[in-house]
Length: 257
Image (cartoon, rainbow, N blue to C red; front, side, top):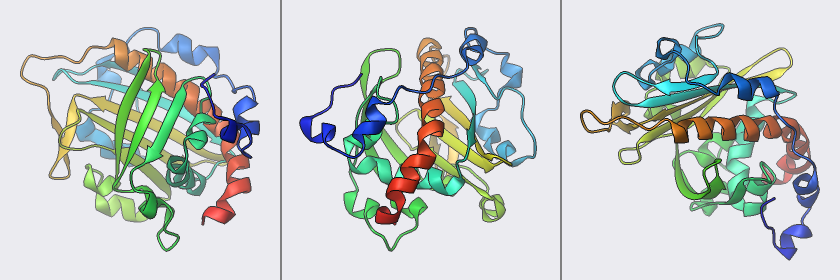
């Protein structure tokens, strides 16, 4: 487990830290041992297909794309979770590192927003409290401890159709910019039991003028080992978040809103 301070040990969050993590179905890990057929994958230029009813090919897997980029996809059932809870989580967890640690006590070492005033501004919606903010993150995605910078964005600013967003009864947590060659997308929609999370990462791509763009030089291909490792990490962390989020939300959202 990741180390915690004495102050964190005395936090009301400690009970979530020591709770055994909920494990994903082993069949999910077995299904992603080898790359999937690229024909099943969506490119970042097709992100608006996520609004279509039903499911797309390649909802779970990873692969190289024809232009040298790479992608991963994960589908997580989240019974008892609402899109509102998901937005709360991304506004709330960057306020103090222990909140990130309880998400995945095995691999999440640190997270803190650089925009604390915005995160704590109760005049803003939950979405607005994390849109256009930067989180400094330290985690292990099965490849050793890494420092990561995540720039959260309004989905309309990375390529999602503003008209479709107006009528979408869910939420999209995403990141992407002009420099870092990765676009992250957590697409959440309601189900009869709660909601489901459809994750996409597109490696080798950035966002310029509110549209995805390949950032790789000609002939360069993204290596697949870190993509496969990130997918396994994603399966692990979101399985556990699905289990703890309703309880965390019930305990902490009133003071935060």
